[in-house]
Length: 510
Image 1 (cartoon, rainbow, N blue to C red):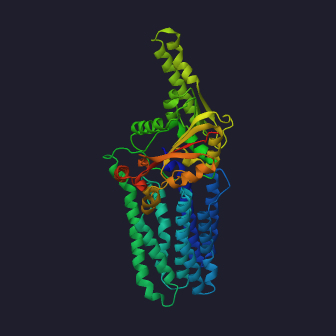
Image 2 (cartoon, helix red, strand yellow):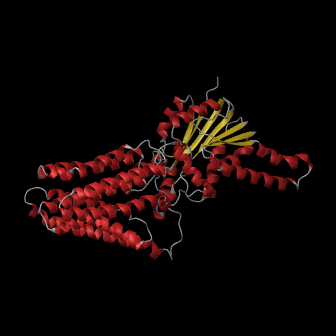
Image 3 (cartoon, rainbow, N blue to C red):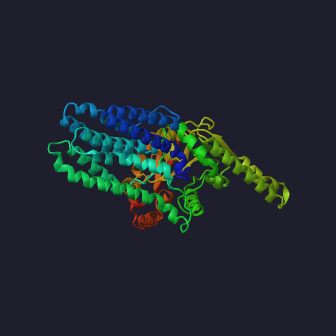
């Protein structure tokens, strides 16, 4: 279950700082390259600046693994851009061939990032600054070749002038919003610049001029958009920030994320209380007949564990985040103190001791679900996972551990987002909206569950859907639309319209 993420500016500030320094470096390099008629004065500083960005990416993720296929494609594009000035010595055809290759790869890295769930703030900056450098280098080469006047440098410099404006004016938002119109203007502008290297460039001059005007208008619109939140803030209610994908490279980064989230953990998907009661009603219907021990993996701050614990003789909550377990321990202590105060009004020793004893039967542990070393074999009657399975990086290992700790005949119940929902598979990619807040998240589609469970020697016995709409990830109007579609899907039994799915599986009895 996707919950409230840290505000975007908290994670993006180092990248914003790099972007501003990069703009100054490139502008200085471009000035030297034009005055000295040597493109190396631009390429050298730009290459060093991009190297600093990659180093910053590793510093943010605290790991040196998994650079990601999308980022590797962007790196190849960057190297192709840096190779354009040397290729200019072999004639315009060499420049055109290389530029077309780099331009074509621009669509590949975005496709890989969306397909593999690797979209991130780093990837966004890396991609758009590689695009900006390609445009500037093409403009610089056209100017050096004498195909156009000095005005041809304007489209290449607009991006960097815009970033300097952001640095000096300090508008309400630290960066521009990516728009489909801006993307199409970039595509048209770059295509016109590449075409200008072919014979008879004067034929393309009106097109290049028109695209330059459109590009300038696109940046002007971006400036206006930056100030719209300030104009609306007095009348509009304060809303929680939309979730943005955070680049993580492994389990340790996932733990750090939830440690940061734990102090203010809350549900941003709508009415938190109503959502919790809806989930609890579904889970209670799926409880097994025997109820000696409940184990919840990814228990977070214990919101489901404590609500269900009274139905079992004992309960164990497992979470990889120490801060989440600390928050759950605080809830447990608060429950115990409230129970002790209530029991003082009862009569007899049972009334005084029972609430405290019930909480003592709840044990909390900091462990990864992939290896629950503190839970014995074949001891649990129910293993529960609510809104956490998608965050677990080795889902097959988790299911093997679930099978190990379950008694024969014990049940595994998992509630998660529906990975086959229309929102995740079609609408969000079409609208360019994020569907994950951790780049390693993987939402399992209902059709995938049977295979995953059988690989772990678990037998699926029931599956279905529950009302889940990631309202915190989308504009309010769209959230209402998705809620309506979820209701339509429930009435008409259309799986692709349902936001959440659940599965119940049993460990076969001997």
